[in-house]
Length: 291
Image 1: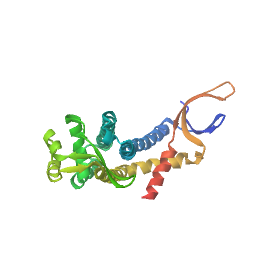
Image 2: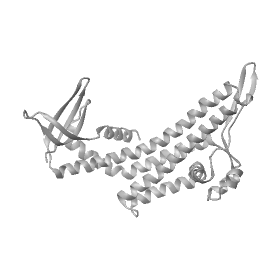
Image 3: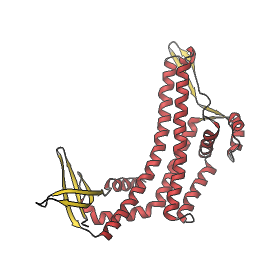
Image 4: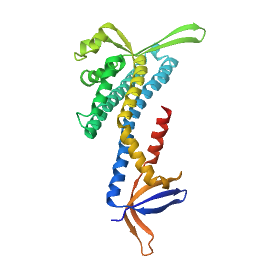
């Protein structure tokens, strides 16, 4: 089987393909192994990005829609349909957040165990970090358990409130709250574990400081995950840059070409290509230089 390095260059009117040196099947397997290492990193990063997107959506929704509620005087006129729609969306977005949080934890741990082994140092590092976050950050352990509450006992948010205090003519100070009542949470769910003592001591919990602290803990978790995979990622980058970096330009994709078919004039007729993710390499190196 003919296998070649090369690149595809895009134009407004189409593309051109350039085939470079031929490589062996053993060399091809090594390229694929290192590409997979970077794709694994990219997939891990997407899990974190989904969680951050859900975090940002909740904040944006509450900021924009709470103002709409007040501007339309919904809290005064008693527009039940609009109130219910707001309530449903609050819970929908928070459920997405809780689900993406748990998915992140489960998937990352599974990936680490499959790659390095259940008893590996890498698995221990991840578990030590999650234990540290659980023990030292109320927001982290509360949201971890709230996901279980939401799965087994119902919607996480019981209600929200919006009120206004008149400061002067045509000027009001608004207050928007999304709070958890600890008594309600404790009465509906018995599996809070360590969080039970927190709930006994904190009668009312606002969602907004929780989300602020969660953003910090997620950043700490991501930094640890990058450190766990960093050695293998850097080795993969070195191999790909050393062996294919000379083909990289701003407007082309460096690829491995297989299933190569040419016509009677030796012009390329058909091929299968595997892109070498230099965009991921650039992004990784940029982020590392910023830390």
